[in-house]
Image (cartoon, rainbow, N blue to C red; front, side, top):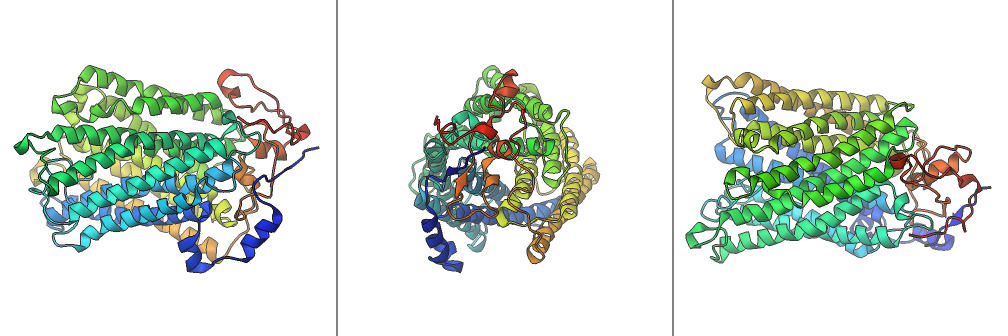
Length: 579
């Protein structure tokens, strides 16, 4: 007989007290330290940033649809271009997954009652919100928002070329959101190591949790470098230090080294959480255990380690980096990523596939990221990089990588966990309409940009002559961008309808595997009253399917060996081994 473990962190009378006392409404939102509410705050705020950045992208594409367009001034175009990239990368892609989904889901997946440092967790969100508002305030000051690109290369970001207070607001926004990420990383690392439930050994952690742990360690390595680069840039702008200015003996290349030492790990800081989402979702809708569990874990570690050593592949054309070394490392990082692809496909192979909205978004991610990854391998070759550097080929590659992760995999996670967040189901047909419109728009937008790049169209330009033959492909790309915009109308309408006319979801509508699906939907304040025995990386599946003898112990898919499900006969004492 399966025995449920008492929750080790709170008793029923405590839980009742928390439910019937304390602030409600706006005061609860302002003062809560509950990881679920903080995670939801992150997700809502980051989605607002996503939609603002999307509107900016539509304005940019409208400008480029015709040659010599005067829809936007060059200054306005540069400001929208800078803020579009900044919002998407700094204020949406990372905070949505690492601040939002990780905050909400990770404690549930490891059986914890909350994050290790709840007040620090709340501070992290308020720093993120403050940084986001600070950056956007640039639109309200004289001269408009920062307009030197989201990478803020010196000398373009020095005071001679970027006067006014908007660039300073941008720098301060980056610093505030950077501290937010660092504090969240400390919290996630501590929570994962010290608050796991009995039986939740390291190699029984869900891959989503593993990826968030590795991402948190990468953030602790990379984000202090970005903060240092911003401090030095601010000093150059206001204190006459000439760190990046050649006029005083400084070096602009130093800024590039500092920024990309953050910026290339940042690519995987943005990608790895979304890899974790896909790795959690695909087994559920394939009705199979994950193929190659330990292979996935070690591939994630390999990607993280290699990502700290390949920053200079963004600097091939500067002439100051060792091309063979950085080219080799850039090619090598494709190997662990390829392992992940084989394991995702292996998980689906001969599975009982169910093409729900989350699964469709995962499949869309596989195609999008594959294209982005293959073009990334091409750009790791210095001759190809020289030919395509600063062209729309790089723009298309970059968007296929980031759009494939943060948008496809991000919305796979949003649809997958939506029933857990709210205890109600969305409308499946509207979710699938969202997916198909998004997919059509995605490929129509970015495939023409590869061709434009090969034809020589430079990136970061607001206008182009009519006699170069670029207009047709730019019109096609712009049409695709507006199709993407229309697709999100169905997302918002779907959530509105589900809220107005709720369909109860139950605690585990997907028959999912990991521990968050054992909690109520939505979870109670301290997450669990009881916990199932944890005998594998699929404890909820074990509990609901005690007679299933599928080999699911961590690493079974990687080496073909493992332990049978014994959850049906497990006791609390049996599950009490801690890593």
